Length: 335
Image (cartoon, rainbow, N blue to C red; front, side, top):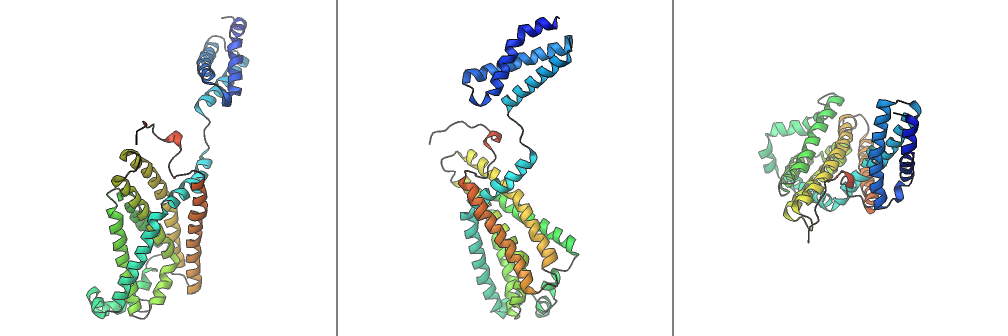
């Protein structure tokens, strides 16, 4: 093959492809079709040159042109760090914020139910007697007893990992099983409220309620909020089975399910922070006000993250779902 003749014959096609690549943002439909055709043609030219007359300059020129055309047709790759950053600055906070009408009421009801049951247990020795024997109750509620010893029962690192694993399992159960008509999250919230009420009621009944709340607050505020978020988002997923709105049930479940995955991944981080607080701050020798203060700061920071960053992301159109380019194609449906 005569390389000079080959170059002269196809020079116009190469030049035209360069022009279309430079104007890729303003192409008409016909020009976009032409770009695809020329990309395929020049790719063939590159293959011919490489196999028959491997001229370095020509191969480099055509390789660069083909790479630019391919990037124009397929889109540029988004760096992993940018995807990671956008997840935590837009997708995750928006997904949690948009579900606040579910998880905030869930939290309010949880605290009310816990308070009522705890007051009932604290004021009724007969009820306390049904929970455990008198000597066991004294052991659990005394200074340095069962409830306090629990937080230092294992080395801080392993205890934090154990707590994190358990709470992550509870949150995942709320999120994933919420599709069963929202019943599992409600059940898990109630059982957790009952367990908490027993501890609070027994400690208040023994006159050590303030001490017990001082142990709970450093990690419990953030931990419980994470559980409320998981339960609320899970219940919202379950509601899509009952009332998918203007979407088909499959479309609604798919969209909400992808948001659930985002929330699940985010809560892993939130519960990790809670586990670290429970493993290292709660049993520490810091004064109660300092430990509680750390817990309050962690809770406030999370709420600011949701209601400031999340609200802003939602206002920009973020829904917690994946980008449109990553979703499945859907067929328009009449409503």
